[in-house]
Amino acid sequence: MSENKIEIRNLCKSFGTKKVLDGVNLDVKKGESLVVIGGSGTGKSVLIKCIQGLLTPDSGSIKIDDEEVIGTKKDIHQKIGMLFQGGALFDSLTVWENVAFVLLQNEKMPRQDARLEAIRVLRQVGLAPDVADLSPSELSGGMQKRVGLARAIINKPEIIFFDEPTTGLDPIMADVINDLIIESAKGLGASTLTITHDMASARKIADRVAMLYQGKIIWEGSVKDLDKCDNPYLQQFISGSSHGPIQIEV
Image (cartoon, rainbow, N blue to C red; front, side, top):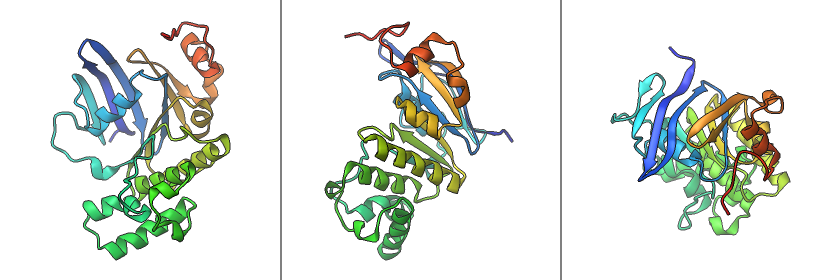
């Protein structure tokens, strides 16, 4: 058995003439927190959608637990949790119904049992039981992120994806969410893949960091290696400088 939970080889995906992923090679080890950094439009979200099976790659291989998932009917979604960038909570459902969505829809759990389980997980992410019956619109941005995290972990997934988990949050709340991500993943023993351009978040939650640029992984290493690396693309990105090899069209 491989030590890798996810193994990606030579992954390619284009939209028309635009090549978004151009031979991506990447591993996520079992129990590891991998953070993929890169600017907007570099293909980070496309990468996650390909792994989840929401997009079909043009070529390449994606293995989960040593089994190829591209072109198969194998259902991997019971292994996966997802925290979306904007929360993506259902406005028509209460907080507890959002959190327990997978239990109600996929596992057909009785509503009373699902509600109790949702409240238990809400407590895990620091929310009181009286939040359960509120609507998402009554919550602050930070509370919505916590609800999204509760929904991502309620089915005890083996793999959790985090899509820009700190976007739109103030620095203190962002750090709270980072702590909750670490605690939740370690508590489940899950492998996690986070995509972000928030370097403070990346430094805190990552065991390993990879940089995606022009469809390829151009650097990967530990958090400690970030500042010692002389890769000019990486150094420009983490310093946030407008001067360097990465040119932004304006």
